[in-house]
Length: 292
Image 1 (spheres, rainbow, N blue to C red):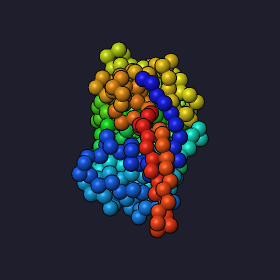
Image 2: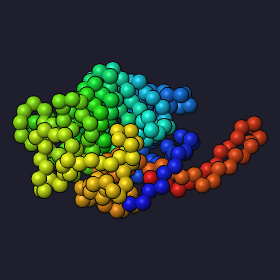
Image 3: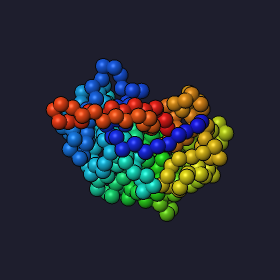
Image 4: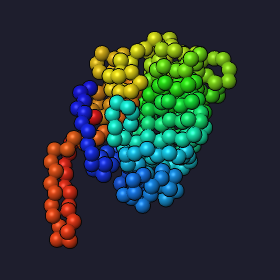
């Protein structure tokens, strides 16, 4: 896959151009901005306003709140936000967990918790998110699906999987769990953790034979370990995702945050025009190409 990266400061433009492939034509989009440019300043308020099938788009910033996604809605951030690049969306709290997913789809966030687990997935889908810096596990999978996430530098297991859950985690990357813990672990007992097409170095009860296609003893070769999660063709995670989940250009899907059909797509702005208005305002016109 070939990728072109750029940084765009126009949050509203990013929000508009990047939503087309996750929102149906009939869905309503509710915008959330912690800085006050929209009617909703918290994710919780945006989710409460949205109806079934709607999309809640969260503009860049840090949102200090635990949230629960418990209906069939799409919750989409403005990209991950780490110490290596800025302008995305981070959710943080002292709750255990910070995020609970019981239904719907969530993507394009950085998530952390100072009080325990980052994300508990009971149903629905968590995809293309970064979970890092949690004082508990990164992800606790009790059901649902976890795809193309990176869980890194959490105090306990990066991915903890309930005994009763099977085949729910794929195309994910884990790195640097807490001391004495594992990248992937089955919580509450023995047996194999249902992990396929994933990458990790430290594991417990993870099936790593050829039949599961997981990359064992895998170093993802991030641009910067546990900070800048881009990978290149030298990574064992490149073009190594599960069949049927290609990248947006149709090439075989990559593991990790920048891979798969829900890979974060942001525009490369090619033209900006400021048009003075008779009312004294200014009309902003911009065009761009979607790149990732």
